[in-house]
Length: 426
Picture 1 (tube, helix red, strand yellow):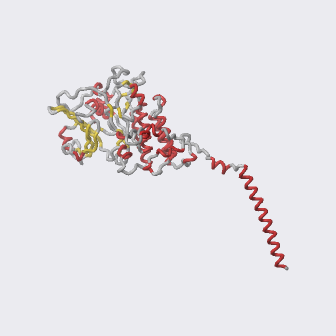
Picture 2 (spheres, one colour):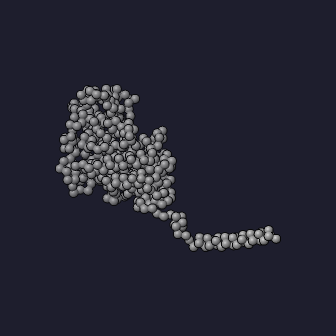
Picture 3 (cartoon, rainbow, N blue to C red):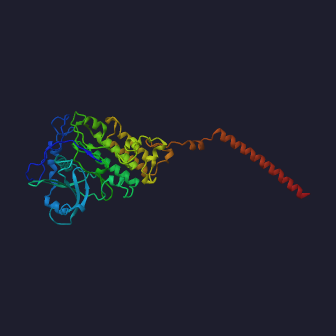
């Protein structure tokens, strides 16, 4: 899945330095709706100011340290690659040199890549400020400008189970169980809700997709890659106007058409991933028949209230799931994918809905598929059950007829028995 990026900017100044230059202009595109400030909502401070307060929590590495940590960026240790560059598995020692080495992920800027210094600075800034169980932890960074060029690296906590994308679409891996999928959805939603509503400044993630949802050893999800993140609109404004960036298949159409960025842009992207979780299909797959290539267009042929809905479910689940819960998740996805951004739910509302779905699924209280309304939680009596509970007139007539036949048979049996007894007496 390719990203589309539109930005201009020059790289380093030829100096050597151990800390990044943290200015809002380093990561912000032209912003016509928020004037010259980067502060959002009612906060008097923006991300750069908040970062300066917490920057001491990040460790500054030398390039030599990270080169040694990855055995000179050995290809055998490469665990990923993207627009930013390559990601390597490495090990670093504690600052004091005591204790065991820690396994980490080290992302190295590709100087010829689509993402550059601005995105690197944005990631340092945002991950230096945020702190949540469902956001990947940034341990430190390296920034060196030398005669041989610039070096930009980031050091994260290591996520051994790679990404949600790997487990959904890589057929060589075991299928993700239904319960695990629900837990991943909830954790990812909580991470987005925190960015939107849990900070002093509002953060719009802008690149939510299955490949950016990393999984730890217990399959706990954590959002990664904050290079495209932006602060939300300041008080009195409804959106931020920016150059359009993101990933095809996940970016909200209203954002692509207008460049107006809001938290509801993230909500749309979350709706796309909801359907990926249900179907086991990518948002765009060019190798499928034409009418199946676009996931959202394909699922529209199977409305949630129709009998055909079950056919969209990931066949790798082998029906080991709650179809009632699946319908409710699809309904939630449809709400996230509403054409009008203002009609989409907040991520905090999405979190609450997912919690209710999971509780209903875990509690075993869901009625079977034929008698379940996925959003009202009320059992609906099926026609068969209604017939059992309220006998029809035809059923009553049949029973009365059988009763008469029984009486006739019983009478004939009695007469036959009397004749036999009479014969014995004679």
